[in-house]
Length: 90
Image (cartoon, rainbow, N blue to C red; front, side, top):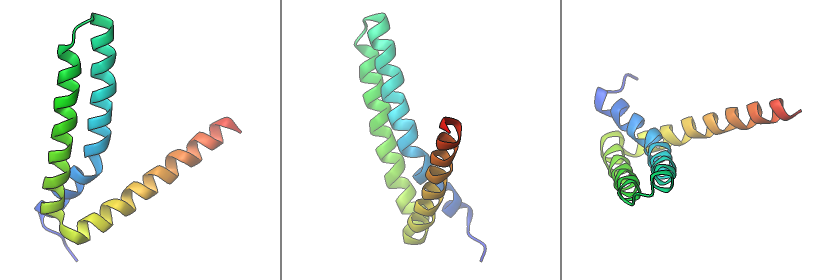
């Protein structure tokens, strides 16, 4: 079955929202500490909040089937990174 473009946009939003939000929080707080400027902490919080908007929009665009599909993608990606990490340690 061929899915419409909005489905795939929803999948992209569902699978990238948390990495973008958490990476922004970590990076912006590191910059804030380095520069001693609270603005970067606020910027990180704002980007993290936008990542929740990405999640909501992704749910609306992809629907229940997209949520299941994105969970499957994330589970496979997580398993790949775990295997890669274990291989490098062993």
